[in-house]
Length: 274
Figure (cartoon, rainbow, N blue to C red):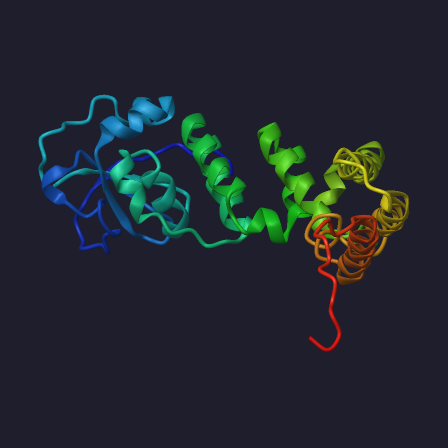
């Protein structure tokens, strides 16, 4: 989003106000007007603290609580401006935050944060993205954008980990992957194989048992399949064939073990006819 030179004006005609806490005329210093003509009545101290650009923009305005306040147009839709401004306010205000769970929403918020140099707020947006359903449902799109836009490495790692919910054969092209180099894509596929090897190693760290070679062989087959046809995460652990095989192995071991144990209670002689 290109930076624009702000022209201040004064409130003359009634404008729709944003929801609380941006609708209190008695507790505001300035007005931010969104691109869809929604007015946000703001306390400039909060915005100036997180944004040097806002600090410079608000420098010199009269803060006397008048209804005739300076208006600053912001090139952002109110649906994007509202959550970003909420994140500049104290913790109590963020309880009102409800985001549309779409990647485009997060992209627009981060774009606005960068336009106004709000690094602290951008970090909060990325934290919300890390906990969203977007990064689970569309990990490749998030991964591509994270690499392209220079987001935190934490987002990259979470998105990559979430690609394990699908087998490699189900990882299809998305436009956001255009920002990755062929080497990056190769690394992603290598990551899947390395995760499969790590799972294989972890599953073998437990105590050994007589039928373990058979179970290990079956696990190897499943893990190899996980790289192609079933997801490593959310698929391998609940595979019913694996559970049935494991149960049969354990049942056989139980029968073998109990057959080697003798009952040590002496048997009383039966006197026939008594």
